Every structure is written in C-alpha cells, then in structure tokens.
Length: 322
Image (cartoon, rainbow, N blue to C red; front, side):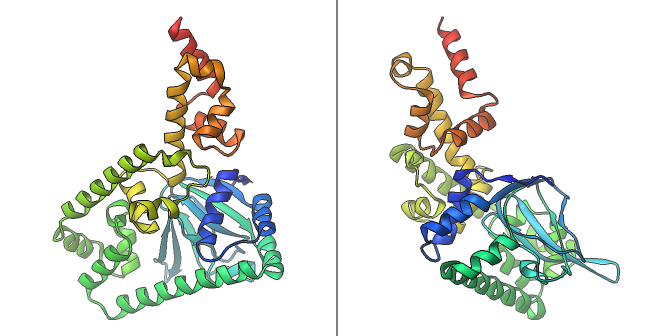
C-alpha cells in the first residue's frame, strides 16, 4: 500500500472532526499537518491482517471497512465502519501487540492515517489529544456494548431495527451477508425481514434533505467559505453531522470533500468561460475565491473532477470562443 502526505483540505477535515470534541492547540494542528498520510485501497483489499502489528490508526474519508476474525474456520464480522469513523486494531491498539482481527475493504475506500509512533508521541505532549481520544473510545465502547446487548438478547427483527436505526442508509449500501454476519442472523432471515420494511419513506426523506441541501448551497454559496466543514454545514441546514453524511453518501454518492469541491470547480469553470473575468483574474485567484485553501488542492481537485488541469480547460474554453 502506498502512503502519501495528506492534502491540507483533508488535514482540515480531520481536525474539524476532532475539534467537535475539544479545541485543538495550534502546535498540535501543525503536527497533524506534518504527519497525516493518505492512501486508497480497493474493495476486498486487506488493510491489516490477523497476527500482525497494525502500525497506524486510520480515518475513513470515503468507503467502508469491516473487522473480521475467524473461529473454527468460520469468518465472523465483528464491526463495520464507514465515513468519519476511526479504525485500528482493537486487540493491538496503538501498536501495542499483535492484532487478533483483520480489516478488509467492503468498498473502494479512501483513508487518512497517522503512525502509532507519532500518535503515541503526541499523546505524551498534548493533553487535548488524550481527552479527544478518550471521548472517541468511550463512544466506540458504548456503541459496541449496545450492539453486543441487542445481538445477545434481541430477536432477529429487533437486531434488524437496531442496525437500521443506528446506521441509516447502510442496509441498502452494504452486502447483506456482511450485515447478517455482524448481527449473527442468517442472510435469508435478514432479507425476509428487510422485505417487510418498505424503503420508500427512507428514500423520500433522503431526497427531501438532498434538495434542501442543494437549495442552501446555491443560495448561500457555502462552498466558497474556506472553513466550511461537515459539522458547520449540517448545523446550517438543521441536520446532525451523521445524517448529513448519510445524505451525501446515500443520495449524492459523494464524500463531503468531493461534494464541496465539485461546487467549487463548477463555479470556477463558469468563470473561466467569461472573458471579462479572465482578463482580470488568474486561475489561482479564482480558486481562492471559490474556497480552495491552496493551489495544490485546487489543481488536484480540478483534475480529479474534470479529467484535465485548469490550464488545459482554460485553453480549451478560449479555443471554443475563437
């Protein structure tokens, strides 16, 4: 797997998630800027294996991962994590020992990562980070305890309803057999229960919130704010951060970063086609006005979403007018 330095937009995205728990010291933010890495893995690719040390803690930007273990040659799904979740070895947390589980991609997945060596060093120097991760771990273990309880005492229908409530949109997104394994019920039973619950109301709700988001973005041009974050945008339109993430992934099939950058790129493309604007502004000036925080983030996003560089697109637009 190839690890590369994270882009500034991605670092800011993770910091915003952490700062929703507690404000972060400027020096700590610079540490993340320096040490946060990015990587992408394909569906069915193993992130780390059983009986090996997991060297990183990961943050899912886009995609889904599942934790698994084997017992009597039978694969058991122990957890499924999606966007905005932190993932690492549970049994070998912070690289303290060998992992008893392995983690594999359920979908093509984009990740950010920080090495446990760096993370442990930061724990030793920054109280803020210790506090934040304590809160993150508390939430994880509360969720795990609730999941273990419902799987142990609940019937199949109760397990289904629990998963549908705590993971809205994921029953249609994730492979049925994986969810069945997680809930410890047969896939055929889960399918039968699922058919009894219509998805029309859920899809209608996603569509309504998706349209409301579009209206808000177009009216207020929120994408042009350099500090726009998932949490701040969710608050503006009256959604929880988790629900907005579900709308972005379930209705638009985009991560938050790609959704915002698509608006920024489209805004820049419209301005490039205007000769009067191009006489007075450089591409970089348009990028900053559109909300990009750096030249590299602008060029990377533009090429990813358009398939060519901004310069190539600009030259093509000029030729069309000739």
